[in-house]
Amino acid sequence: MVIEDLIEQLKTKIETNLPQGVSISEVEFEGPQLVIYTEEPRKFADDGNIVRNLAKILRTRIVVRPDPKVLIPPEESIDLIKKNVPEESAITDFHFDPDVGEVIIEAEKPGLVIGKHGETLREITKQVGWTPKVVRTPPIKSRTVNNIREFMKKNHKERKEILKTIGRNIHRESTSKDQWVRLTSLGGCREVGRSCFVLSTPESKVMIDCGVNVGSDENMTPYLYVPELQPFKQLDAIIVTHAHLDHQGLVPLLYKYGYEGPIYCTPPTRDMMVLLQLDYIDVAAKDGKRIPYDSADVRNALKHTIVMDYEEVTDIAPDIKLTFHNAGHIIGSSISHFHIGDGLHNVVITGDFKYGPTRLFNPAVNKFPRVETVITESTYGASNALQPPLKDAERHLQQVIRDTIQQEGVVVIPAFAVGRSQEVMIVIEEAIRKGIIDEIPVYLDGMIWEATAIHATYPEYLNNDLRKLIFQKGQNPFLAECFKPVDSNELRQKIINEPHPCVILATSGMMNGGPVIEYFKAFAPSEKNTLIFVGYQADGTLGRRIQKGWKEIPLSSGRGGTETIEMNMNVEVIDGFSGHSDRRQLMEYFKKMRPQPERIFTEHGDERSCVDLASSLYRKRKVETRALTNLETVRLV
Ligand SMILES: [Zn+2]
Ligand SMILES: [Zn+2]
Image 1 (cartoon, protein in one colour):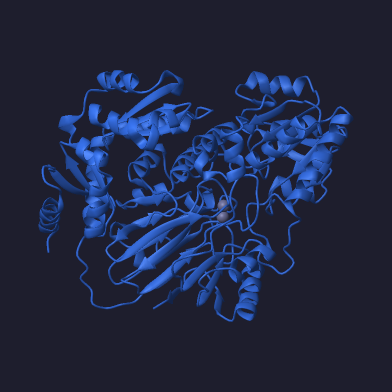
Image 2 (tube, rainbow, N blue to C red):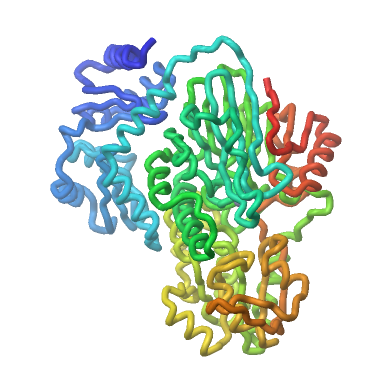
């Protein structure tokens, strides 16, 4: 059946199932959703059962949108909305999104805008036509989030066309009678960096992650030139598990190669991804390295991005449904569950995950409706890769900071912008609040503040304790007075030239560039100061050299020459803050997984870690296991 006929058929089916007196004007696939346009959004808003019934009958995700004809102009709508809600709700902003006929209302007390059982919202829908969505005013404004919203608004016509094409592609008729599923590994096996997999069936082909190995010049990109990927046009979807560059750094490049389809990820992953991609090409340009794509490619990728929250089952190809689950690794990180065919096979790709407590996130999900094959990360898969408990790490950190401050020293912590920085911030804030550490300034340099703002924009992606702290007790730790974003070179120079007891959190995490280098140059010569490593330092990085005990460190002077830095400051390595599961947590994750899988493949770890984890899981769980290598294809069904 051609797609036009299918849409016509669906429209008739919907019309015959609508209650008397309710009408619709248009039906269209937009991305994975079936969108019903109506001139009477108030009737749909009044009766929640209409949509529920239709979804059940049509077995697909349905959204009802107001026909653009009935939308009251934004200025008038704002007046009407304000008339309906009490002043105490403290509305701070409105964002009209003509793309979806939605108005986002930002308020300090969202409950008052929603009203009892959603009463006020329904009234608003009736009066303005737009579908209202209420969010809590983010406590920190994120430049990235704002730019993305503006960009989407400006490009909504083009985006609508893109979504329409994607939608029609997803809902095309299946043609193949054969049944098989294959997994191809293109990067990230027996190594960390350039993660990339392709899952294929006779009908469809989806890519999971497309990372870049920033630490390596020879093995930087996944094997994207293999014949089965050509032409890129025939890929159905790219799934991005989380925003770290080793999982998404080369996604914009795929559009340069001719890919035109969608990217699926969670909303925080999308925003963080754009921030990190732009920073990546910026840093590469400054270092005189080859830049694989430019900001226009980043924008093009953004236009094709479709966001999904956790636990939303979504059709991404005629025979593949995708559901994201919390991975506990960084904000928005997900474990991807693929349901293939009509009950034919279920694949779980963990991406990076943390099965244990952290200050920021709930532990990774390991309960699925069904699962036969799992592909798991193995960063700490080696039998001796144990991390100390988080509580010990926190105490150790507080102790080192206290000792350094007592001797009037400065603490420098190299940190990744996303994940560990926010974790460390929360620990330090608590220690200051409880009087364990004196009240000292905590400077945040590099992208740390902007990444923190993105965390604050998506509180629903943080763990229960932190959410409670932010909302119920009004004690948002990120807003504590001790945190001082370093937003100018003047402030940076001032911190360097007038040393005073303080903590400096600065990027990059492995000290291979970024503002942390300037602080290091300034504070390394004095034994009063301390350098604290809270994250993994890869071979070849400055961080690793310092850990090895180098006493004289050559660094570029910024004027083309080199200078030698005398290293006298204390160095402390604090393990336990990792966003990855350690060996014990990895084994535990599979022990408690429900249902138990039939087969587990390992990846994302050095050779020993991947092999070690695969053989231990084979012995303990009595399932087929394998440490994948790059460039192999395994038949799953
Ligand atoms: Zn990661
Ligand atoms: Zn990773």
